[in-house]
Length: 362
Image (cartoon, rainbow, N blue to C red; front, side, top):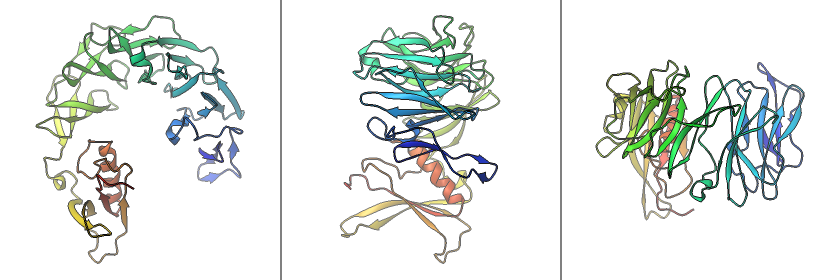
């Protein structure tokens, strides 16, 4: 899926064989302009491989379309002057959830519909100015697609609510009142909803049964605040990125039942002990005018020849204020993603140089 001359195109493959020509999914939509700047904000492919949601800019709106592959048809979801965005699909591809809001930012709504927009159901509406500007509900479908968890304001706090995708019940609050709740996610077996709670000042994991709120679990607390996390497929382990004054940027394994947390990696440990085949070192190079020594983080696989013949990659990030060149799993401006991706490139045999030019301009 890609954008060319402002429109969406689809090139299909059968195994390793490409179709003779691509399919044009939209006409004269001028994608990647006005309200949309990132390709990930344009295309939302469904897990079933048969539907692709596409965000198409208009004068004062952002319209959501769905392209259906089996009959090559394009369906506009909820036509009008309002903005539809942040599309997510249920795991079976049978439900599409999205945020809809007024272009004047006076209200926002959470909707669920069929893959082509039939029978849309509104699950929630906000008119609180402090929340309307947050265009997404951080929504997540249950593994079977019957329920959806999302974050909405209750008594001035963000709370996790659960609703049936057909709108048959009023959304039910499942998070603890009196504290901010965020990042709801379902366990792969569907038995638990996890979320981050700020009840004890630091963000810590809480687990609740989506249908029986009285069934709760509080996993072993981490030493610092949790910034991001992911369930294991077996539903009894959670990998979490945690940071704190004494435990910076630590990747930790949390057991959902009783048991200790297990640190995996942090930058107070030797990186060579964590990734055995890669040497991570710090060096500097001179600026063009030789007025500055620019720090560089270098990643190099230890078995590469020392004669300078190994291929190199220089990673240059945008935003001179960002601290990207640090050996950590999590940090300012998504540094953990940068670190992981460059570590992977180093393991493939490239010598990777991450340039740290904070404070520069152009």
